[in-house]
Image (tube, rainbow, N blue to C red; front, side, top):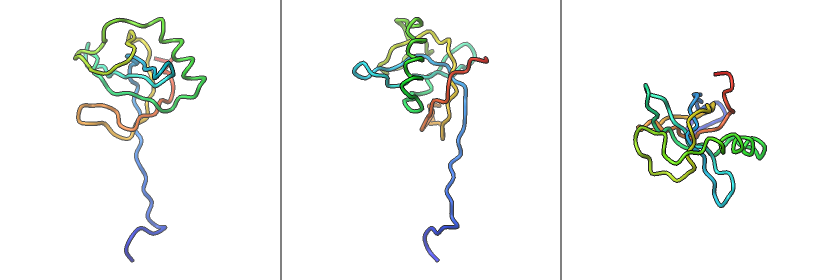
Length: 118
């Protein structure tokens, strides 16, 4: 028997990581996700952008909490060419993703919530 039958099931492995929120994005004034950083020693390395996993309420709450943290300079150790609103890296987010790129960016990320307990 060739091909995939009902006995064959594909299951992707999800990974989770707590990452630092280093910025957020607005597209034409509307919420477009958060930019993440990963701590390596005293440095913060860019870890990608998450634009899934938010509903209207969580996006509005997060934007309200990030606005007082806005800063002019990037918090990353190396300059990153993304557009976005930079913030002090004080809030932590729980992120679920499928894999990491060679540069360490999360692939297919999903925002699961803020980590208030750390």
